[in-house]
Length: 227
Image (cartoon, rainbow, N blue to C red; front, side, top):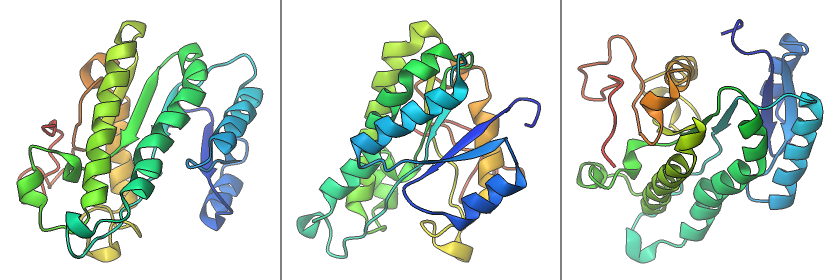
């Protein structure tokens, strides 16, 4: 990847010691930008900052990774977190994509990856009903619809807008060690999908492909998840 990626803008809404350490270990290659996906002013300010750092160049890839998963123990009837979930998981993606779209149109690769989950698949909803997070599932389903609309609108420009499922990762949101894949495994497999030809990924929801997981019950075989 070092031959393909010259600079990474890593965003966070506040201070992040992990990102700061990463930037220090990659001088000049990783730059930290403050961005809160719930605040349009913050998003616009971040886009202006990135534009200034790129000079006359465009942005090749945008990865919308911010998300929230909130639980509701008593099902939809007691769900009181849908608006928060939509603000972060849907509107935040839309606002960020809007703000950075001119830079992406100026770039050469024209790739947007919206990080998602097969828990937002309407087709698979019966199979994942056990998870008491309806706002998460509903907002991710809406994110999928948003991704498809962007994909349709910008296909003629050569874009790829992809809803990418990185797998069940050992992160804070994923539940730590009980999950399947390390963040490094999920990130590597996600990047493999992002750098496929745009015509293969635009408007799709692929799972990552991880060797050894192709036939397990939690299957990571690189196929597309049904909407």
